[in-house]
Image (cartoon, rainbow, N blue to C red; front, top):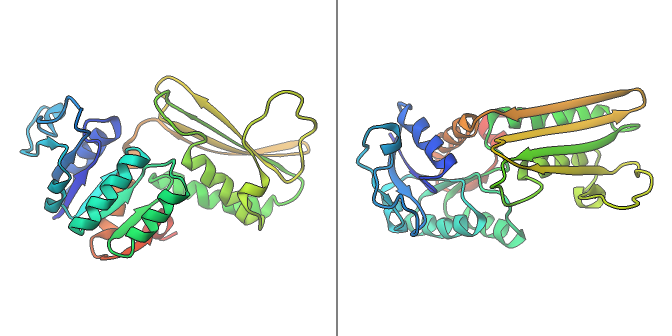
Length: 264
């Protein structure tokens, strides 16, 4: 049994992960972490499921000594703190957190020299299949088509565009042999003038309880191709995360992404 720690144990994603682990045959929840100010501190991690696991939610990162792998969907500053503790205790980590700056990404890369790390903008198996479809479409539709990336998330999401939307733009740009930063249009307002050829536009919605919608439009003369992924709940992210944790079970070091985990 692989021993799993969950960061943000009382949050929406944390609880989804805990429930998925409870239903698995080869993974066992041994550590549940939350912020020191969380009202869930001291509670049983599976109390919300109507049963007790014996795993008490704690803010002590020393608890990671009881885990083989941490799954983290928190925020960049929290994840980086957890990453350091994982290095101390030689615990692998699956990172679903988005919004890292260059320094944060460098810290993750450095940590992968001493522990196993899966780091991806989206852990969903379906989303990663969508990335593959986008690569194929972008190579075929490499001239005469304007590309727009649309994404929508719940009102609590703190970064925009989402890491998934940015990755979608990167997939298209790379298929065109370009760097996303050179072709991205992150926002539009006022008198923008005609749309430039070869650019990739982004638009964002934040509101309500939207789990996650992403669409990439390839707009040509007389036709429009849309490649869409919609999440109705967080179960897909949890399943992908558990697959990533299983992948790391026999890894001591290294930085891996979800296409590698999924064999894509």
